[in-house]
Image (cartoon, rainbow, N blue to C red; front, side):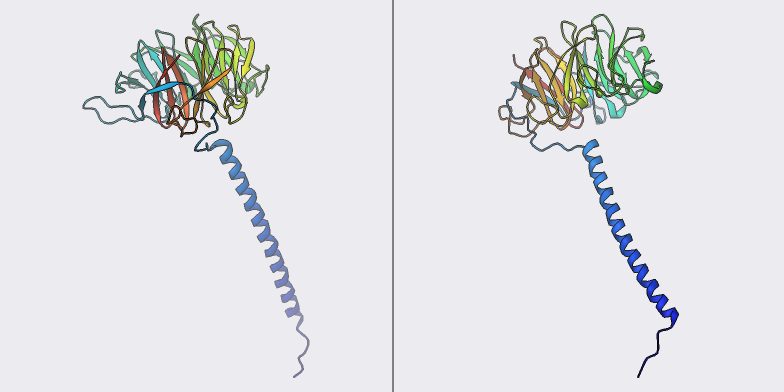
Length: 356
């Protein structure tokens, strides 16, 4: 039977269906493309902000001789007291032979006895002015504790019992857009000056004991070479008064004279011995050896006074450079006599006897 011509509405309907199918096809590929772009962006974000260290970082040239004496994965409670934990501790100080650990995630300081038990908790329950907000560094001048209260843009000066002697609200008139300093590194000079690493302006700031800004070292923006820093971190001062600054995102340690002039640098970005992936803190012993913690390499690297590489600390088998790391995210460092203390953000407090 012969069929008549298709009605006009049927032809239009078929054409409409075809156009919709083509549109859906284009939309499907567009959605796929957008999904891939989003996935790529997520990968970049995770790599940049949550970098994963290898199970066996490539710091494998030589092991520096240091004997592990103590590891406190969690502080010990005193007799009859409930268990206590710390949350991402960032640093420690030794004052009158007593250890004070900066319990950053809990906004407090833990005073430990010789056995690693918590002797006291320093927070706002002792003095309401001890209102810690993400504190990132702690130091001592032999009489008081100094705390970089990062979230509050201030330095707190405390007695060993936790009473506030002074609260210094930091100011940097040269900061871009008036952004207040965010202290993440701290050291106290022999004359009482307070040196602060300011992550907000990428400068090292020097204040007098009363909190007056004396000097701003750096360009006020991300820089490298002799011009400045890219997120300055830990600070240490040697016996001659020279200042060592961890330049985190430039992967180096910068040496400054006592008056803040650039003297030199050592290290570069990398993942092999003598280079840095994410350096955090620096400490100097009585012989001038320089210790630098690296959160991504999961090691503490050791350098001579002239920046020569001496080896690294932090293997499960001390004499085997290829064995697994003791650390997960080493950060805070403190040298007291022949003892090197390492504060790991996730694994707690380590103490090593450093051999000459």
